Amino acid sequence: MTATAPPRENYKRAVLRRRPFWTMARTEAVLLTRNPGAVLFIALLPVAAIVVLGVLPGTRHPDKGLGGISYLDAYLPILMMFALLQSGVIMLSSVLASYREKGVLRRLATTPVRPARLLGVQAVIYLGVGVVVDVVMLVIGVACGASVGGQIGGLVLSLLLVAVAVLAIGMLITALAPREQVAQAVSTLVLFPLMFFAGLWTPRAKMSPTLRTISDYTPLGAGVRAVQASIAGHWPDTAALLVMAVYAVLCGGLAIRLFRWDWE
Image 1 (tube, rainbow, N blue to C red):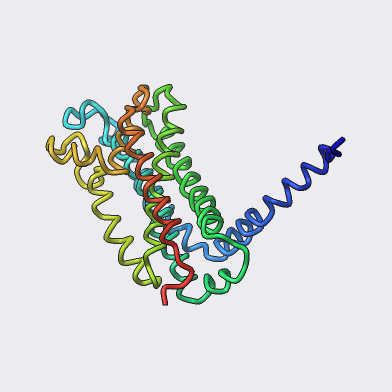
Image 2 (cartoon, rainbow, N blue to C red):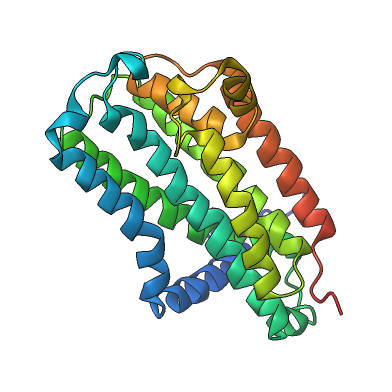
């Protein structure tokens, strides 16, 4: 008869297997708290923009040019995407590329740590930062009069998918950038077209049909489309959810496959 380990021992073994991941996550989180400017960089601009939109009375009234919604309702999901983009692309790629440049990743390569675990730790941290900033903006927006429909499940799913897609893009930039300055330059170049098609400068409702179609196939354009539908009380369009899922799978898979501890 084969001896079976008691449930308590199985639990302890499971905890020990998970411990390296959470130990690394705790260490990286502590390092992030020692750089409060990074969190302020992610949160300050989008939160301030929502406060300004909420304070100005004219932004809370429906606008025919925006399809009958207010500027506050139109820009709330756009600025939420902006916060996720800053966290998942700008900050994540910059931090990991600086680790590569300083030789931190080279030293980690001598340990049992796998690329997937390191990327997963960074994803958890910056996903958490981006989501917290988004929740703050959502609360401020609702307090200022933004209308949020009853489709909470669709809203949560949409935000999680766009967050994972954005993080995957940030990881892919990290995998390909040999130095921090390269990562910053590439992520900045990526930021502007993504935010353009998300509607930061021209809301999607005012885009031409061609631009709106292109926007539908970008991760943030699909994210804004899904979040706006959820805020309006509708379940997000399946096509928008699939676009974000495809970006997450493809970019994340490529990031893990192409990741190098040292490009020299």
